[in-house]
Image (cartoon, rainbow, N blue to C red; front, side, top):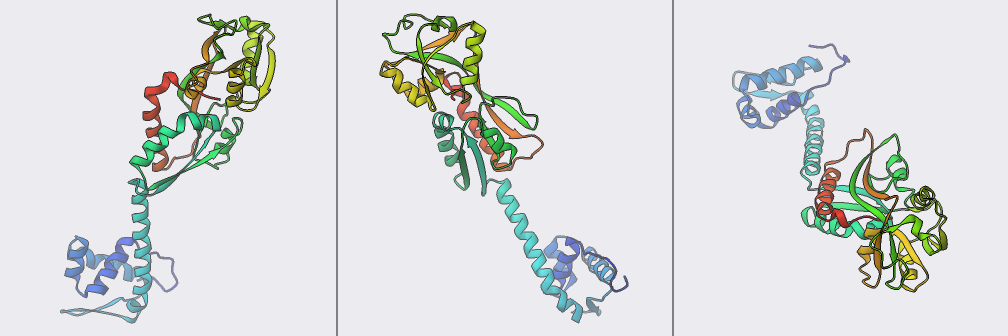
Amino acid sequence: MNTPGSSYTPTLRQLRAFHAVYQLGKLSAAAEQMSVTQSAVSVLVRQMEEGLGVRLFDRTTRSLQPTEAAREAVGVTARILRDVDSLGAGLRELTELRRGRVSLAVTPTLGAILMPAVMRRFAQLHPEIHVQIDDCAPDQFVSRVLGEHVDLGVGTPERAAADVDSLTLLRDHLALVCRPDHPLASRRSVRWADLAGHPVITVRPGYGIRPLIDGAAAQAGVTLEVANEVSFLSTALWMTACGLGASVMPSAYARDTGDKSLLIKPLAAPRVSRDIALVTRRGRSLSPAAERFIAVMRSVLAPAAPRRGGQ
């Protein structure tokens, strides 16, 4: 046996064997409970005694009698085994998606367009899992992921980040939204250069899609006549409907509003993609609940991919 005070930690199998023998009083009964042989239980108990440097049972030909050390140890052993079993049960619940939480950063515009169908489907499949939404500005959702405030983000990263992984969920393009009486309404496709001299409504500088718009206009060699700058695409739409000017925005957002009085014209030369991406922190393992949320989101959005997009 080890000398008193020596460093030794019983294994879980040794603790389970000791506890079973203490409760049942027989090696054979403990072996049956543990689904092992009687000699295996005897070896486990003896190993624990040798490791602790103390006798736990007085053995006779007919019985095992717990010693004072065993009576003192059994309470602690029971608590350890309960905690381990509770830990195992809790982890199984997480793995089997019977419990858990997913946190998601998404911009308000994209949230309104993409998430309702996803949330409804996920709630139907996994009602026990709580989904927490962090709605944020377009330039903030990546920082939410990097700061580990959320498990994942959905949006359009304005620039690449070394510490995140990005997976394109959907692809959309910038378009001109106008009324039927607009001078460009009869054209099947509108070039950026065609916007010269026509008042346009778009988002404020540095916000959301504005860098893409300014870059495309510069590439086309045209100076946009910006009549109004807004913070939300919904504002641009109603202003366009009132005749205050055509709007430049992702085509899917205009389609999603369902306003039949407005026309959506693809913008070309150049054609500007507006990819919607799933962003996660590089090197970080996602929980089973988060992995399942991603799978559901991709399955829900995939059939609608050609019609989706946003700010």
